[in-house]
Length: 151
Image (tube, rainbow, N blue to C red):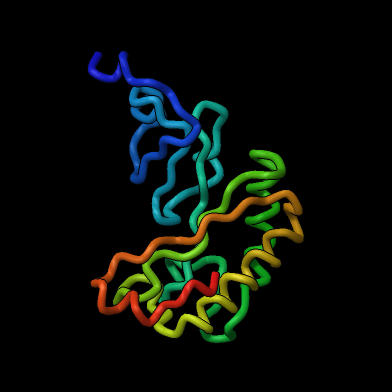
């Protein structure tokens, strides 16, 4: 098997949707899939890190209501279920490519920082030990210069 000699590391992560056995075979300690997850994705073999999106499409943005500019109250139950399934202190990945069209599309860094803070506070109601990862930027260097390190 090609992955048998891979070292396992809690720092090694995988992005995408495939079987947990594939993650185990490459020695991954965690994985994510841009918020296309459900409670069955949380298991004890490889940690699933849920991604909270700010995009305009509500199909993918179950946590944040862009129309009301605040976390969705209906998502409080989902956060609680995630914490119940995996326990307190897990990681949450907040945001995805805010400066890129058809991704989160939050072009103002001050607004992005506010949204990030709101989601952190919202999740900490159910999981006071939660840990957070700021989603990455993927756009051209030109777009990044407008994003000071506010987060």
